[in-house]
Length: 427
Image (cartoon, rainbow, N blue to C red; front, side, top):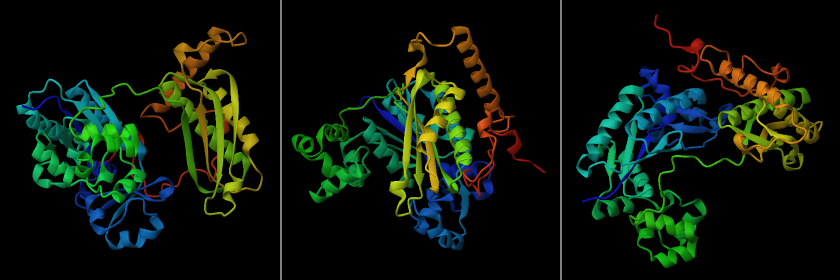
């Protein structure tokens, strides 16, 4: 009889699958999704993988190959992907209260309390519901540890005979899965460790699991020992339903063209500051320090010397867009170098603390004034997040211009689920 189990729900080729939800004509058509500014391939459908197009390939290098293969190319549409992810996760929460969202397309579920003889049936039903209600295909891996659940999910993806669900509930089945898994693909084994382990003759996950515990700990430390325990069926990681308090909040972007004009950089930095402060308010956090960084084109041999950054400290921690923007623009004035062609910029909010724990200083604004400012920001957030609103309908004046810094998205699909103006039309 098996003991307590974890499940990992993994959306298949998530970005590509999202593009197919409202385009059923793309079923079976090869799809790639490109990174910001249409730079690199960041998602591939199975059909594209079969063509041999590598992940992360620069678009300009594989453009001819993609066109020759009849590949449908999309710019990244994060509004769509984020909303579809939220819909999938909502289904998971309706299935079990103990869910850990691991990434935009993966989540762990604690199966404690589920009878062993019905787990497979329950996971098949869950998979069918996700497909029915969102049109997103998922694979589900089940194992006694989170690491084994991830390995099982990969087997569920690759072995079509499993029907999308794989459970590692016995020694023979587990060893077979580990033997088919390169050690570098094990959750927690990084590139450097993989190279070191391969040099020592450890090629598969099973090779790693069969090593003496003391040797593993000596070679790659406590973290490696935890992974070893997980592969051998002993839990070293639990479901983390509450995310840890973040230490920083960064909003940045590569520009579609090199930017040299200070006014355009001001608009970009003001936009990034607004984005970051909006996230802080959503998490009820405040920032004490603001840092701005400017990066030159990395293909320029003098780019490292041209890169710059500057930091300012607020008198009182804040999540107010106006205060954070003012601080960010002050930092920009320190960091900016005239004549440099900048390709990327960003705002980092540091020294974060929960709003409920803030202690006002002697020189803070009156409480009623601070409350009015906070309530105004919340009202603006609600207006801007409304499906009927134009993006950033209400914003501060520093963002009014339209310059070269805006991201290139020449092939972006409509934001079907988050913008009324981009809803699909039936004629």
